[in-house]
Each structure stands twice: as structure tokens, then as C-alpha cells.
Image (spheres, helix red, strand yellow):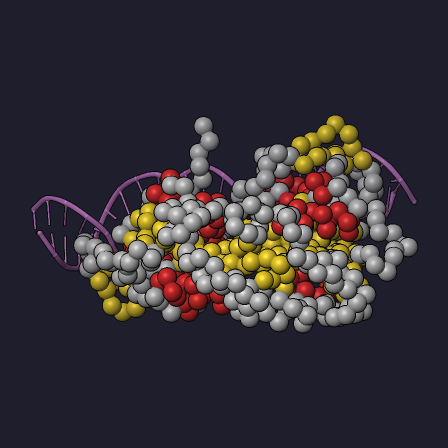
Length: 239
Length: 239
DNA sequence: TAAATAGTGTCTCTCAGACATTATGAA
DNA sequence: TTCATAATGTCTGAGAGACACTATTTA
């Protein structure tokens, strides 16, 4: 079970290494995550995050993007994907010792999955609903970490555009923030802030009237990655 | 080499799992990191981050704190330790497939190691010097990630106190910021900001004259973990 | 017309940055 | 005394939050 090795540390026992994905999106104003229903033990019938084992000669990032493409059916270079954290409780998988490297992915509102989904494939569910259910393994904790990472990064990066289609309005961008943070934002202040942040969005000449009201100018994501000064989320008021 | 498993993902090949430590401190105004000199191949004679393999039934965090105690000879609960990131390039170790979970530790200026250190044990070296040398494996990248994490966290958390002794002056706290960020800060503005940040530091009745000049009040670390509004680092001026 | 959303402007308060001034020790 | 650092204070400009007002569409 263990082999001895030069002077480094004595022994190195074998582990299974997996990747798990926290895939988030915003669908018609609701913050959603991707989950599968497990078809086998352990945790058969439970909801779980998508994931799988890393192949022998595969880079961790590559394993994550492979799983992401399998689940979303979208080329992973069109989605934002970053490493989240690694979970290594010896008892997290009852079968054997598994170390799982979790990744966070952000996606726009994908047309898929529609109504008819196979049992084996993933479905979008509101994040609140996922938090309320008992996910398999330690996936509740992983999901919580991913959601918190996403919420935090909207503050000081331009990542909110990863939730939008290629062309979007300031109002649509604002509704992303509102869904992820669970707070309404002032449309006037938000508009001023976004426009003033150099490189956050680039204006197009076209407008759209989807959403009703006065036509809104369309924008695309700008080249900037960081937001400074940040767009701070409303702090929780401590009574 | 691979086993087949229920329906999950087909196969799960075995990996070695290691932890690597980025241990940072500030010694007399210089930002330093802990490094060992490797005694065996591969990378014999090169500097490397301390680390080792995770035991069979050991939690990742436990493996990290075990290694940290071995290297610093300080109970790890007295130091700040957090997971940094996981590195899984299939070629990062020429011997075999190793996935390494890196941890970031912050320590005050420990009296150890002094002059007479064994060859096998770790030594503090200026971070700038470590960056300038070719570390073993992918440790230059891990170190860079750890240093950037530390720099960023000083902005919005109270972690700078982890670099200080139990009792410290505002000036000593400021010199931590200056060493880690590599920027001088205005002593007056810094003092005002720290005092105004609720829970950052708690004043003691005693003062000290170490450092010369007017006696400075001593403080201990306060209960707050987050800093809001943050203490922003000086931005790089783009000409 | 009303209703809805887009976009602009204004006021105020907080806070960061620049810098003056006084306080209190050691050499 | 001089020198060094601590501690407090003042002024100014950037920017966030609150909110009034105008613009342009659909129903």
C-alpha cells in the first residue's frame, strides 16, 4: 500500500484524485447552479456536483474543462473556469481515499438544458434550493465556497460579464449582480459606476428594446479584468 | 494501474499527494520566506519549499500543519495557515505523478533559525532572493501565488497581525505592511486608519521605547478578521 | 394616455492622501 | 540641545449612496 522513497518523506500512499465543478449561471433573474442526480451508491438518488476522476496523464485544469464541456456541451474556452479549492477529508468518500480539486465555472444563460433531460445529465437548479438540500459527499461545503468566491469576485473583477451573453445592456449586467448578491442595486448609481470603470464594458452602436421601456444601448465585455475602485456589495447591517 | 469503478467515471488511477508550504515572515524589515536545500535528486542542491507527502489517513490540513511544525518548531495553532492552491501538472515531478496541495503560512519573526542550522532544515531567505533563484519543481510559481495572496489579504483582512508578536506597536504593524508590499506608507494616515478600524487592534496600557523616539503604545490583535473599508495598497502608476 | 425602463444630474457624507503640529523619549 | 518616532489635527478631492428629473419605447 505504501512505497518507500529516497529521503523526501518516507512513504507516499496512493490516492484517487477527482475534480468537482461548481457551475453557476443566472437564469431569468435567478442564481442557479448545475447539479446531477446520482444513479449509483454511495448517495444514490442524491443531488451532487458534476465531476469525475482525473486521468493518469491529464493536467488538473484539463480534467476540469473536460468535465465542464461534457456537462454543459459548450466549448470550455467560452466559459470562465478557475480553481476553487481542494477537499481532502479522509472520510469524504466512504469507498476510498479521494482528494477532490474543485473548480468554479461561470456561464451565461445557456439554452440547454431544456425540458427533456436524461436522468444522467445535469440540470440547473436555484442555488437556494441546492443549499436547502443535502448534497452528496461534502458538496454542500464546496458549493458554499464557490458561491462565496463568485460573490466576492463580482466586487473587484469584471467577471460579471461571464454571466452575460456576448452583447448585453447595463440593466442586464445589473440584474446579474442583483441575482448573485441577492440585493437590489440602484439603477442610476450602477449605471454611473459601470460606465466610469475603464475597460469594464465597451459600447456598441446598437440598442435593444428587450425588457421593455426606453431602448437600451448594447455593450460587450471590455478588456479590463480588475475593477478599481471596486463595486462593493451592500454590507449586512448588524443591528 | 487503473481500476474500473461503478458508473462514476470509469477509472481512477493512483496519484501521490503532497503538501508544499509557503511560509512567510518579516525579519527586521525584510519580507522573507522559508526554503530548504534539497539533499537528493531530483533538483539536488536546489532550494525548494518545505513539504512532504500526505499520509494515508491524514487530512490535508493536518498534513500541512504537521509539516509546518516540523519546519518552524512552533505549535501550528499559533501560526496562520490556509490552503493556497493545488498544482497538478503531470510533469511537475519527473519521478511520478504528484499532485501538490500548497498552503500559505504566516509567522512572526521567530527566534529560530539562528546561525547554526543543520543542512536538512529550513532557512529564512528574502523573498526577492528566492524569486531570483531557480527553485525546485514548480516552486517559483507556488511562491509567487503565495506572496500575491499574502499581499492581497493584507488589504482586506487583519492578517498583518499574524506577522507581529503578541504585543506590537502601530509602527511595527506598519513596517509589516511596508515590507510585504514593498512600499512606504504615510505613518500618520496609517495610524489613523488602523485605530479607526474597529476590532483590528486593542490598546494595552503599556508602552515601549524599542525603536527609539517617543514611547509607543502597545497593542494586541483584535477580534476582527475583515477590514472594511480596506487598507488599499498603493496602485502601480501607469505612465 | 400610462407604465416601464434608460440615461443624466445633484447633493451629501465618508474617506484616502497630503502635510502641519505637538509630544516624549534617547543620545 | 538635537534627533527620532509617536500621536493628533486640518484640508482637499474622489467617490458612494440617496434621489430628482428627463428620454424613449410599448400597451
